[in-house]
Image (cartoon, rainbow, N blue to C red):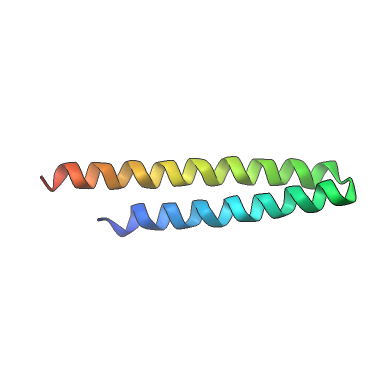
Amino acid sequence: MHMSGLSDKFKGTVNKVKGETKDQIGNATDDKRLQAEGKLDKVKGEAQQEFGEFKERLDRKDNK
């Protein structure tokens, strides 16, 4: 397994958690900008996770 795939998945998880936190705080404080930032961070995190999984699939295929 490439560490880069694992690294992307980890960074994606961090961004999703950060985004969820921002979204919830923005919702609680009625801060629309913070909510939007949170939603963007969540989408970024999901994309990073998917990219990491893609890298891992390629690595597994190359190692067969």
